[in-house]
Image 1 (spheres, rainbow, N blue to C red):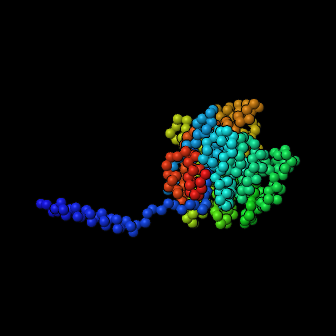
Image 2 (image 1 turned 120 degrees about the vertical axis):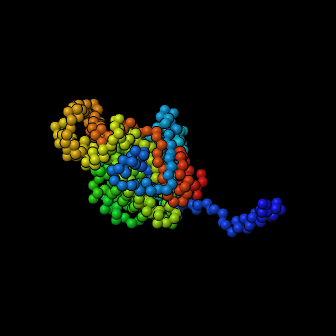
Image 3 (image 1 turned 45 degrees about the horizontal axis):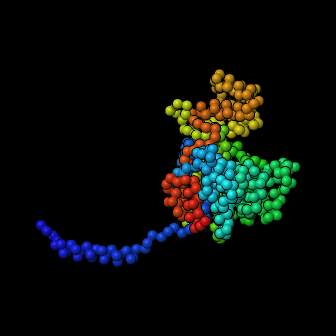
Length: 448
C-alpha cells in the first residue's frame, strides 16, 4: 500500500530542509580553543615505554602519566649525516625548543650553526614569565636549548653566560661549577663569578631546599649541586629539593605573571641511570619525574588556561621488562637496592669488601662463583676501563631481575607524548618531535 504520493514526499523533504536551516541558526559553530595562557613542558630524558613500565611496576600503582586522556607518540631522529636515526639530547631538545631538526651536539642552532629562536624566547617577547627546572646541570643539553645558542653542547661555561643573559625568571637544577671560578671550586677560567652577576641582575640565589622554600617571588637561581643533582634514590631530602618541589616553586613564582608563563621541567637523570643499566635508579627517577607531572597537572586542573605536555627527548638503553631469553621479571631484586650503583661504586666499593657491599646496598647475599669471578676480573680491568666495575655490578643485578638492555647509549625508538588542557587533543596521534614545538606555538597563539 502506498502511504505517500511523490508530491507529498517532496513537500516533506523541503520542510525538513527548511527546519534544519532554522535550527542550525540557533546552534553556535564550534569555536577554536582559546590560546593557552601557560604551557608546561615536562621532558623525561631517556624515558621510553620501558622506563615508564618499570616505574609503574616499582611503584606498585599507576603513574600520574597513565591518566592522560590524550596520548600520542613522537619520532626523535636528528638531522645528522652520520648519526642519522639516533639523536642526542641536544638535537632532540633543539627540535622541541625550536621546531627545527639539527645535528647531534647542537644547542638551538641549525645545521649551518645559525641560531634558531626558541619557544622560551617567543614567550618572553610576548611578555610571559619563563622557567627551566632540571635534575641535571642547568647548563646541560636539554635546559640549555631553551635559553642558549651554541654549536657545541659541551661549551657549558659559554652556555651559562648565555642562559643568564636570557634573563629566565626561574632557573633550578645543578651545575654550580659553571657559574663560579676554579678558585671557588668551579670550572670557569675567565674569572667571572656568575652567581654574583646574577644577584646584581636581581636574582635570589639559593643552594638548599630550605632556602628555596623561603623564596616567594622575583627572579630565582637555584644551583643545588656542583654537577648534576642527585639521583632520587641517593638524594638527601633535607638539603636537596625533589623535582616535584622545584616544579611547584617554579609554578608558584611564574603563575604570578599576568601574561602567563612557559615552563620546561626535565627529569634528566632517567637518562643517566639508563646509560648505566641501573634499573632500580631508573625507576626511582621515573617516579620522581611522575611526581613533578602531578604537580603540573594539579595546577592545570585547577584552571582552564594551562596546557601540560609530557614527553621524552629519546629513549636510552633499550630497556625491556624481561630479558636474557626468560619469560620473567623480578622487581623484588631491584626493590632491595638502597643507593645508585654510581654512588656505591664511587665511595664504598673495593675488591676486598665487595661481597659485604652487595649484601648491604643491593640485598644480594648469594653471589655465585661466576659472579664473584666477574667482579674480581672487573677490579683488575678498572685500571684501563673506569666503567668495568659499575658495568659488571649492573649486569649482575639486571640479570637477576631479568631487566633487559640492548644499548649503553640512546636508541631511535619512538617516545610517549601526553597532553592535558587547551588544544590537548592535537597531541593524540603519531607526530615528529618538531610537531610538539609547532603545537605549543599554536596553543600559545604565536606565529613565527
